Image (cartoon, rainbow, N blue to C red):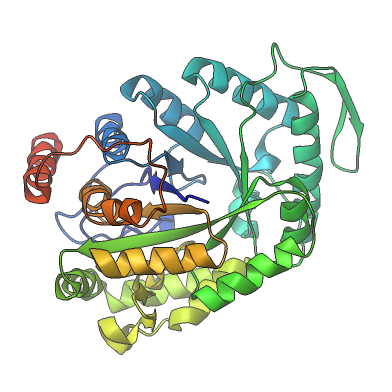
Length: 392
């Protein structure tokens, strides 16, 4: 089975350092900040499409622009790119979500993917008026997805549950195709919901053995078809030394005080997945760039300040392709990738790693790359375009 590659839209901002994804801890280095205006995000989306990514994930939360509105503005800026829209079930009704998704599918001609984010931080949930505890949130998500899928049949749907009651809920027309549901969560409350409702179960980038264990747990809970995906950053270069030098540069830009503050905030999260991310690096900046290599070519440095996905594939294009192939061998079919800055790193991966994956038979053969003849030339164009668009 072939793999699917996705990229990421940094709707909270981008830069040449790790941009922290929560309001209380935004302290990028001078000159590194790129605002997430629609022109810059369109550049990233068009680049992702050009170099062969299938879709782009757009996050959700108070620290970023709204995913539905932002990606809908990018539909006309792209031709084939799909949009993996993240949203939280607790902040809108399932009937409205079903209607929004059906409309999105029609106006985009079938380019919507949905990332359901139950939420692992009560403080963040309460900003949206959601006061349920974590287990209750997963219970609600289960009901939410039952209702949404029922409505998408195109027939009036009635449901009576603990969290939702709808009578003859319907939409103008059933979405075609039905948007795939992507779902993540590492807790005991999350895995049964994933097994019952998700099309793609997403995990953050842990070492392969830990990912394999999680996949096995989900598979043991269901006999229905389900795909597995992983969320990672990437730093891929022509040589391994260049890649690790780039990682070291990201690490050197981190302020120890900012790291300490980030670890304090992230440590309070109820998310099991977040706690697993923190355990990979222990919040220890002093370990240095290679000391944070937790598995060959898997680096935990991003998670020192960034919540959520905190690990990166680091190495030569061939080394990164090797690790992608290793993850695929244990059951990962979809890779949701990103890098700092997202514009330039999309070129590095798309032009450096993707051709190797295609040569190894891991990508569909009917998809071609509209690439220029040299990585350097495209990178220069990316930098030049960013300079002209930058506000700094």
